Structure formats: structure tokens, C-alpha cells
Amino acid sequence: MQSWGSKQLVGVLQTLGRALQDLLLPPRCPICHELVAGADQLHICADCLAALPRVASPVCSICGIPFDGAGSDHPCSRCLQTPPPYAAARAALRYEGACRDLIHRFKYDFKSHLRRPLGLLTAHLLADFANQQQPDLLVPVPLHVSRLRHRGFNQAVLLGEVLSHQWQIPLLRQGLKRTRPTTPQIELTFEQRTHNLHNAFSVTNSSAIRDRRIMLVDDVFTTGSTLAASALALRQAGCHSVSAVTVAHAP
Image (tube, rainbow, N blue to C red; front, top):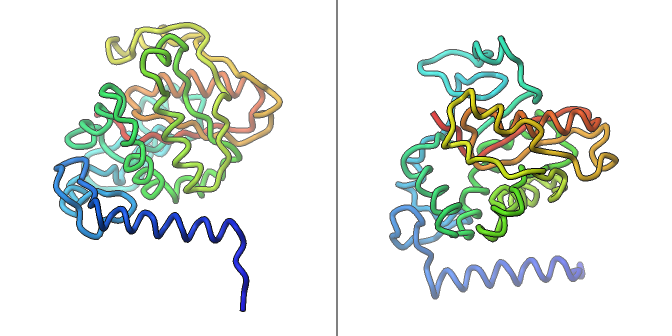
């Protein structure tokens, strides 16, 4: 008879505990708020899950922006004209509808528990991309200390913890730091965004990322300026390559 180790026993007890909790206190779907019978890890009902706007090909093979229509992935005109400092970026969902509502509640209504469905969806939908990039480390895009103090958490770190657990890739929580406060990107034009983030990031420990394949983690890809500025700081510090994943891509 095979004996169980302590980790196996803890895992079984946690699984039984979650099953008992779901039986006594069935979870509610975070989108429609209906009870979810036989809930899986996501705790999202089947109808809401099917309605989430997933990013699908064709997309830009570099920045991941979705194209309308059918066809194969190919670089967009902007990436051809001005290649970003990251090799490739992908998003799991389009930033619209229920996806936008979940992310807004997660970030601005302090619903940090929503990292679980958002992170698990991203881990599942972008697993093939992560396997292709083969990152050595996940690095969350940082918040400036003033914004972190106000919000109480960095959404990219919370999402990175879920991805790290699902993909079994180490998370370097403080690989980057924001050296100065910046205006929220959503308030700026495309031209202003790049200037707003110029020299806004620095690497905290160059030896930790030198010659490593880094995958950045953030919540939303809008113009890509934040990921580009983060990737540039990492490349200047000597990493091997940079890729990026986000929960959503804004139209």
C-alpha cells in the first residue's frame, strides 16, 4: 500500500474542503450572480462563460491585436513600422461586455477575489502561447507606490500568482519598479502615452533577469505602451527575450 506524503494529504483535504463548501454554500456566478450548480474552479455559469468575448485568430502575430474577418495571424501595420521591444503579446479576452465589467470591479471596486476567474481563464486560453514562448520567469507590470497604497494591491501581481501556479513558472513579484508616478493611460491620447511612460520603469535586480526569457503580466492591453516601456527596461538590463500576456485586449 502506497503511503501519502504531507503535500498529497494537504491537497486531498483542500479538495474535499472546497467540495463541501460548494455543497453547503454554492458559489454565485460573478457575472450574472446566479447560483452555479456543480461549479468548477472558475465559478462562472455555462451561459456566461460561453458569452465571454474571446480573442481568436486572426490576430497580429506580434502585438496580438485582433483583426476582423477570417485568415491567418500576421503582423499589423504598426508593428511592421515600429517593432515593439517585446517579441509577442497575447490577450485571452476582448475588453468589452462582461469581461470589461469583471476587470473594472477587480481593479476599481477592490474585488480582489475576481483574480481567480480572470487568472484561470487567462491561464487556460493562453496556455499554448505560454508553451511556445517558454518563459523562465513571469514579471508583473508594477504600480507606482502611491497608486499601490491607494488600491491596496497590484492587480498584475495577483493575476501573476494564478498564472504562476497554473503554468508552474516562477513569479518574480518585484522584478520591475515604477520610478515615478504617471498619468493613467486611459486619460491620454496614443501620442501622449509613450511620452508619459518614458523611463518610468527600472529593473530591481539585473542578475535575476539576465539571460532569462521573461513574460510580462498585466490586466489590459490598450495601445501596448505600458508593455513596451516595461519590456524595454528588461531588455536594457540584459534579459534574453520578452513576451507578454494580458487578460484582455481593448479595441
